[in-house]
Length: 378
Image (cartoon, rainbow, N blue to C red; front, side):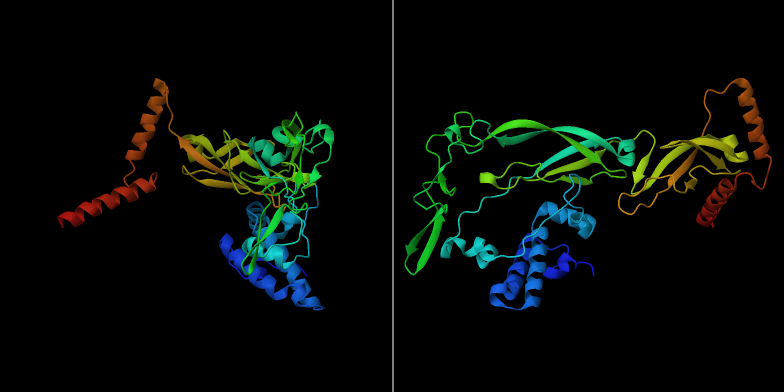
């Protein structure tokens, strides 16, 4: 049985704003939390579903991926070029309501270290690269642990001392009347540790600015504005917390011949009017080379021909799109005297035909014009 839709789990619409998602999560989490439903296996499963849905929908990047790919965005494993999410299944009330009540009621938990920031990189590809797939090397700025202090921020790599003011929690509690108020520790500024002698290289930050090179595998069929997630390739977290992720956004360059719409390719094919009138064959380009397109006689300019299976193979379903060729009948230029004479004779032969059988659209047009003026004067 497949997973339930995350929006349905929280009981919100797909257009719900962040505050509506957070409100729904708090209400359901309070109702089904294991601490309030001791021994209730159904409530425990329900709570896991609620927390998993919230962890996706409360994160802008993960929500975008879910809206685009559904649950499959997080079922590709930890490979470097797939979307993936991992979820914890337990939480206490301070996790759920900490941003509202944390500063009032306080907590005995240690200050949580935060995951590193996510990064975003825009990569330009040609249409051929996007359709066939490729491997691209990129160079991105990155904060890396200082090699002199090993990321501790302390000189010679000496481990920072626990802050005595907050006992390493990063926060202190102060009584105000009937309430105990929790505030950020003014001594360690919420870190829970004190660096007595900062590292000279990183000035106590524990990280330095560098660049790193990555190889990014581009899957065949990727499209404009698609994103590839590289797990743990973002900025490093504080105090040993996990790295953030790197999101590579794909920008496909404009092609000289083709336009892509989903998995179909479109192109314009110019033909002369003798071929349009008498029919023939013309070579048209495809991504693998050339192919012949049969033009039937009496083809009108703008006619669209569909060539099945000559488009782009879908990255998701494996379905092969089509190539759609729109023929454009060209008016000849730079005519010599013989060509002008032949065309003049052809034009006179058209004019001699009173019923205008050779130009049905012209006949309908001028018949309509005549009727228009007859109605005005009638």
